[in-house]
View 1 (cartoon, one colour):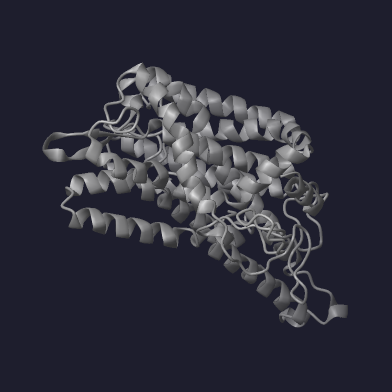
View 2 (cartoon, rainbow, N blue to C red; view 1 turned 180 degrees about the vertical axis):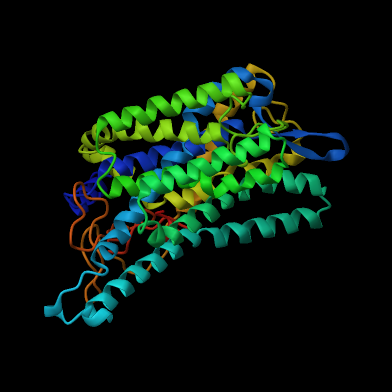
Length: 450
């Protein structure tokens, strides 16, 4: 372990923004913990199993959703990282230097073409990393559902088991769409983008709730709602939002907006979906969820510097770096862990904390006892597997230039920026192997970092 910590510390570029990595890790762990605490299954008539949630029976748990619903932070960091990755090409695009023989008479010169191709290459690589972990997830659940159907399991039970596990795919779809659109978003002032997206959410909710419009209108918020924090991340990458006064304003105004909407306009108090509720703040995102996300972004900006200082501790930074290396795998696979355990436990009837009505405070204690089991199953997605050679943090692969260290502080440098660090050294799954293969994390390992 000490050797791994030392290698991670030595391989980390000095200009790496560790605070943003810490925010991403906290966002991922918050989402995982939140889902694991609010997802439950209940036996019904005819051997069917349906989804349930302790939030529907124990409303005192609602404040937990304010702490553990951290998706806005994930989109915020994602927008920042995508912009940092692509902005060097965007900043140089269109710069004309006759001495380089480019851009003369409005024609695209060799350097312009190189910049454009470099940005396209990085975007394609980023999309591959995002979509990679989804393939094994879909295959696993297609096989699981088929096996349950062949055994005569009711369709409702199959749906109840599979739905939480594949639910993260909606996040991937929105995140991938925004990532693909980042080159276009970089051409617009991010503040304008955020305001327009916020206005779309406001108008949609006005039609949906104020004018009694159809519920499907709300799905316009699925992209617009998460575009708000994503655009703010792009703004931070461009040197904006640096003032603590701006951060405090986002926190105060976002929190005030969310509280006003919940207390005065009937929005749900829970910031996650509650089984059986008529309205969810997340499916699709409501104005209350977007205001709550603004508050989270403000808080994230305020704690960024303290987190950066904390990340100077090698052991803490090593843990954060490893979580970031597998961020997308963790997110996409985390609900598979309790779902597969619940499938295996169906034959045993009610299982406290897993299969049973979550209506008593004792259920919380039972569920907490299950969390290490869920974590152990999720860890299977991290089992090392052979992987092609990739660069150490901040160091390029020989004969193949690779951008250097992501998310440096301050003005955007005039050199390319590495999107994704990879740690090299003996594989943790093969002690004493002494090889210099990259540390791998299992299914979708190359696709983890959003």
